Length: 541
Image 1: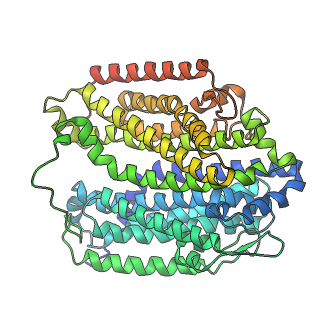
Image 2 (image 1 turned 90 degrees about the vertical axis):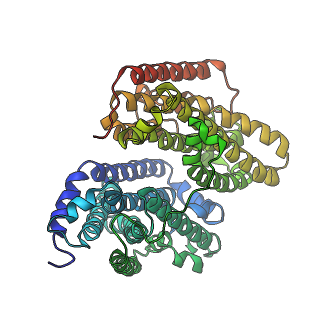
Image 3 (image 1 turned 60 degrees about the horizontal axis):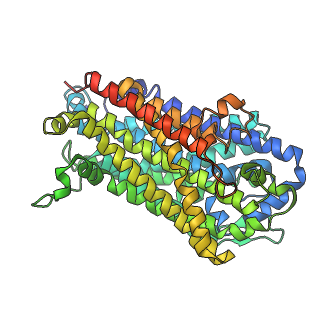
């Protein structure tokens, strides 16, 4: 028996386990790209004279180049500047989660020992996980390209666009293969891969910011840091312009090298243990751990710090763009004035940025609240409830941490925007006051979404993860940022809690919508508490 015996049986098992998860990832990304491509195609078909000016705005602004590389004046290229970074991060996370789920998590839960008792080689699980992740990225290339073709883009450029995004997923398949051997827990392996993804983004952003602009101000040539990043490699394919394929070879080389390293590490460690030993805890626990809220804070403080750093960076960038937004003229201002409901273009811009921050913070809240299901499914809740902690107090600990984290993240984003916005416009004090108010107004909508997720967890725990993310995606795409542009019916747009958030500081907020959102949040929370008190917990055998 070789070390790879049983690989294809484990591939079938992994595909069986991921029959819902992977298609949801792939179809969601393809649908998002197809919808936004169709939106920009329709917009620039009606106003073709705006395509080159809008492209120049992106090319000439180093802050906007952080979000992606501009490859020329085309609808497909402009769409990728807006979407490619988001899709690349999602493709990387899809690959990381797939590899970790079938390697480190299986060891952590004891499944690998059961598999190893059969006719299965030492390297079979790792190989199967890598093959499944690679297959998912190949399908992603096809469906992303097809989505752009359906939206009216050239076939060749669309296929390269799909490959530019899947390239990042391929590279991080190798990264996850290594981190699964280094860390002793699934959470640690995902955290290490996530840190690598953050470094990759920073290198690509730095390379684009330091890049050179051509004489027509329609194209950027990246500086050398972008070539150290898988995200940068994907951007160098330059879809709808050069359609360059050779950077794919860099991802393949990295994948092969990292997988070879992972195979070596598998042979040098014990099953269930990582190469890096777990840190020993302090001799005496912090008094904060005597409370359930303190325990939740201890578990999620690292993730919160990462979100703080991310929103701080984006707040500084978007604030620095304020002076350029204020200089827009003509039809280029149409979206912002429509969104703001007023002729105050800067106010509309700030309101739209606060809506984006609110949606991002809602994703953090949902990620935190889904640990309610994790605690219950993995048996950790049983130990907590064996103490003097009640069910409602356990739920309240997560609610308090979600509220504190939301306020902190919104304030960080608002303060960062005010600091750089005040520098380019003057008057930091008044801007800070306006932006903090606009940020805190997002809290009721975030609360409604969070309460809905908790209700789903308590009502349908088995399906709660998928349904919760479906609620998030639906709320974002049916909301004011995308719903009207996608031509969604009014009743569907109104289902998103973000639709009812006043567009401050573009318009003066009114108490009616805020009260309605708070009432909805309260009713959903009461329903969740009632369900939690009356149902049996789902605990492992």
